[in-house]
Image (cartoon, rainbow, N blue to C red; front, side, top):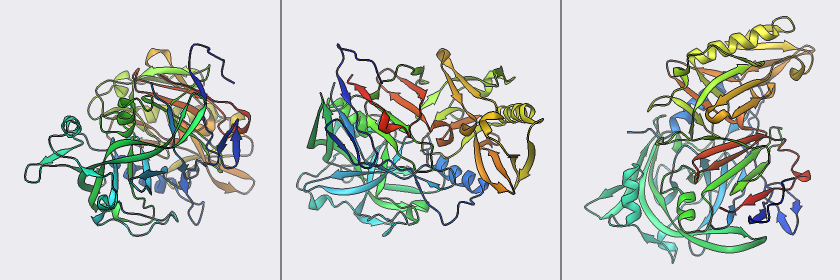
Length: 455
C-alpha cells in the first residue's frame, strides 16, 4: 500500500485483470503477453531466433490524466511473445489491434489500400484496415505541418514534394518493412482524472497509414493491425498526448511471471516506496541504461566496464518485446562461469542442444544465487533465480533448468527482456529522463492498491 501524499494528486489505477473491481472502477481488462503454441517443448534456440527477429525489429538508427489500454497476451517464456493492445480510431470509432513496441516511436495501422497486409491472424483476433475516407474526422498531414517537420529530425517522417504529403518508410533489421503516409484523426481513450473515469473522451493524434508491408510483417501467424510505438520521440502517442496535457509523459507496467499472465499497463507513474531509479542515457533512440557491473552471490564479476558503455552500436536496452535476456560476449562468459561455480557441488550440469542446463530435484531458490545488475546512480536490480533461469523440461524425477541469458556474438549489447522484467514494477519517466523499478509479486493484484502521481 502506497503512502498518502496530500499535496499530490493521487488516483487509483485500474488493474488489468478479468473480473476484478477496485473501488468503483470496473476492471475487466486482462493483460496477456504471449500466444500459445501447440507444445511447450520449445527449444531455447527457437526463443533466441524469435528474439533475434525482435531485435531486428528495433528500428535501425541512420499535467493531465492517466490513460489505460487493454493489453493482451500471456507471459510464458516458452510461448510466442507479443504484447498487443486495442485502440479505437476515427469517427465513427473502429477497433484495431496493435503491437506494443518500446523500440520504435510511431503508431501505424494497415490501411485499406495496403499491399502485403495480412488478412487473418493466428492470434484469433479480427484484423481490420483503417480507411481514412470512412472517418469524418480524418485528414491528411501535409509536408508543411509542424509535426511532420519534427518527425524529420528523428527520421520518423519524410516528405513527398510531388504530393506535399507527409510520409514514412521504416526498414527493420529482420528484412521486413512498412511504408505509408500520415493521417490525423481521433484516438478514443478512457482517462482517469482525480478519481473519476471519463469514458468516450477523444484526442487528436497523428499516426501512420500503412500501404505496404514486406517480410515478416506479411505473415499471419502473429499478425496484428499495426505497431504502437512507445518510444521517446515527438511522434510517439505518449509524447503527443502529454504535449496536449492529456496524460503525463510517463508510463508503467507490472507483468506477472506466472503462466496465467496478467498485470498492469498505464500511462502514468505507479508509486511504490521501494522504487529505485537510474538515468536514461541521453541522445539514444531506445531506452538505454548505464549498466556498470554485474554481481553474482554478492561478488562483483571481473568485467571490463567498457563492455557496458553506450554508443551507436552498443549499450544496455530495456525491451519488453524480447522474451529472454542477452549479454555481450565478455559479460556472458564471466556470468556463466560464476553461476556454474556457485552450484557445481549441488547440481548436475548438462548441455541440452548447446544450452547450459542443470538437473535439480529441489527449489532453484535453495540452490542458485541472486544476481544483481548495478546501474549508474547506485540503483541495483535484484534478479532471483527464476529471473535468469527457464525450466526446459523434466527428466525422471529431476527438473531441467537452463540459463535464460544468451550471448550476443561480436556485439557489446545487453538486452533486458521479459525474463528480467517480470514480477517488477517498471516506470518509464520521460519527464525526468529516468527508469525506475522494484521487485513486486505482480500476480497478487487483488490484494494491492496502486496510486498514480499526476505530474
